Image (cartoon, rainbow, N blue to C red; front, side, top):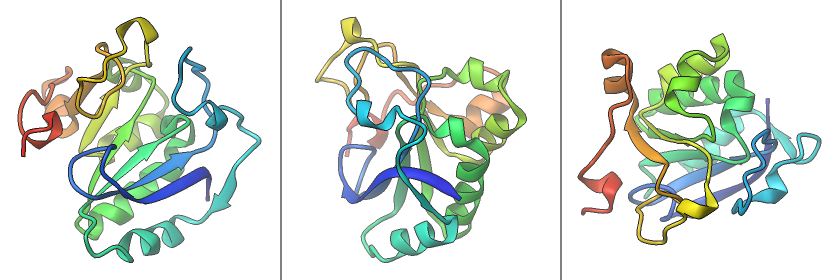
Length: 170
């Protein structure tokens, strides 16, 4: 069961192509200038079963990817890891935003590592208002990185996606 603040069933701004974006409720970071401050409160939101979310994703025949946003998905890591496994079994690409860095998540809780192990792409790092840029694909500030998670895990260090569809090249 996940606590959510909302779902966008046809997003084109949270990753390449038409995606379903699932916004979790609750965030410990409280970044100044946050795009979604309404998601900070851990006591808000609506509870939803992971299987129901998979059905919502499957109802969009154009969707090929799902993005977890927030809030902070890694604050509900066990539930989002379960959801990611269900989605990957259906052939979806799974990406997640996080205010944590890849390096912090590697040293995080077992549940956070489990979620990291199940996703394809991580957009990591807090939003930093002084680094804000409207020119970046799928990121709000220059400090944030778009990472190939399987390659990063194999290398034991962050491996950035520097070209292709995750950089806005189609």
